[in-house]
Every structure is written in structure tokens, then in C-alpha cells.
Length: 89
Image (tube, rainbow, N blue to C red; front, side, top):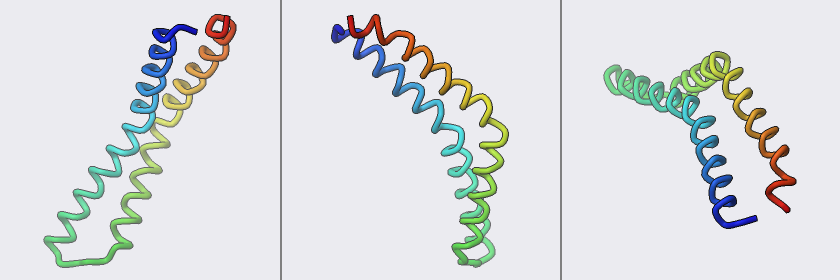
């Protein structure tokens, strides 16, 4: 395997990690900021409220985008397995 092929596969893997992790992390981040603003405005400092809101946002995001994300992961994995003979020899 040449260094160029290794770097190409590494770049594809990092891009996929960014694609898979982006939507859930963004949803939890936005939810955390909104809940934080609401808690600051109402002087409610209960960490359970923020945690439950983030879990609900994460579950909703995974329910909406889970099929797409899993499809991309399976596609990448099968493509990588198909390329093993070309990458080795």
C-alpha cells in the first residue's frame, strides 16, 4: 500500500467520522445552549433538566438521521472490505 492510498483512506474515514458525529453533537450543543439560557433566565439550576433535554434531543436526532448515518457507515465499510485486495497487493 502506498502512502497516498493510506492517506486517502484515512481522509475518507475522518470525513465519515465527522459526518456521523456532526448531527448528534450539533443537536445536543444547540439544546444545551437553549436550556442553559432558559435556566439562567428563570434561575432554575437543576442539572437534571439539561440532561433530560439533551437525551431527548439526541434520541430525536438519531431517530431522524439514524437510517442515513447507518447507511453511510455500512456503505463505507463494504467499500473498504472490497478494496482490501487492492490495498494489500
